[in-house]
Image (cartoon, rainbow, N blue to C red; front, side, top):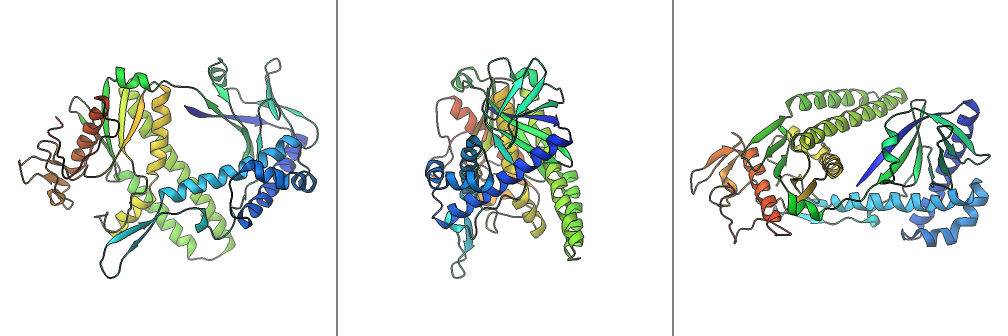
Length: 410
């Protein structure tokens, strides 16, 4: 389990100048290494990069030894993040002759230019670049000059110093004139206990009309409406179109502010939804969601209007998954990802799998075999929940298939 401890630090004017200088030099060093990485085949090995460029980074950017080493780790970590993002979003294209959709996996060779580090930043290693002085209640940070001690805003940080958490490499962040120090904290969790002691199995179907549709072992289904969210997102879209039509520098800056505001709002919504689910079911719960890695939100997989399809492609489903995962682990629960195949096409009563049984226009599922009828989002949550019960019973990779129809989920 990994969480990020966010401390607001309170530097004076002299310390701000030192932090600004260090962050900018670190940023430039990252771009220098990123360009070299891109020009030399994008081999993500920080040790080889360090061997080739360490002396240049120290000499050209004035970084101290540990900071110079951290530059190579920062660059390779960013490329690995982009690599994972590309893997989860393959290139989808439609064959103009057959009308079939195909996927082409993406890798870093699809990049047309090196990754650029635009925001000043610096990564600091525990006990070498940063430490806590508990006697003075201060944070000690290394800079390119002398070491500085900073006051920080008190909060719940004491909860992380009970000996069960391990601190990682911290990051200096500046936002709207305020300075923050982000520290990743990790804690071991025992997943094997969940299978043996699971008390609740909750199937979660994610969408836009209903942000989440949940179905539990007691047959209770709840919906989180997405109508208000869609209306607010439309306001963001309309404002973005208005600014894009101006083609001015001030409009460009306004677009950046708007993007940040929208992202923060989306994150807040996902935090609220995931927190509500975890608080409702508590510990020893299994939250089951569809594995949307590589799922195409293209014409063949989308049934709504052009506007609805655009919304599906842009909503932060993966972020909701991340938030739910770490919040569940924090209380001793687990998130299980299952195959999304046929979860919206299968009848939870008789196991019949038939695509035409789902009626998108009326948001209903009507089984042509047994006559079972229900809301289509509820059907999805029921099938997802059933896959979770199979995992609890010992099936490591539960999934539905056409040839092997599984009987009632209730």
